[in-house]
Image (cartoon, rainbow, N blue to C red):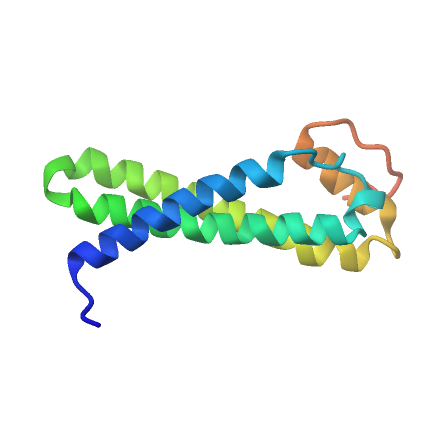
Length: 132
């Protein structure tokens, strides 16, 4: 099999579509963000899928950018970098949510609730605030 530019562009399109489908799927009946949800298998699966969605979306927008790089110029580069940074942020947040928070949920549930409250812009409830 010969890899051509056309093949890579089509693969990027498939990756973008798959990312969109995963994004829709993980949002349906999403559990409430609290420490009891963090320790469930559903939470780990959803956040692992969010990591996959971010990676596929990054591949998809890279293919779109490279397909039109000559036509879209500097503004296109700026948009690509901004979107790329956004998807890398999503990957990082989903990674922490999938693998870090569950590992500390039993030893410091107040901290996990505060992290989730900060992420969802809800008021924190814990007494384990960082003191300076």
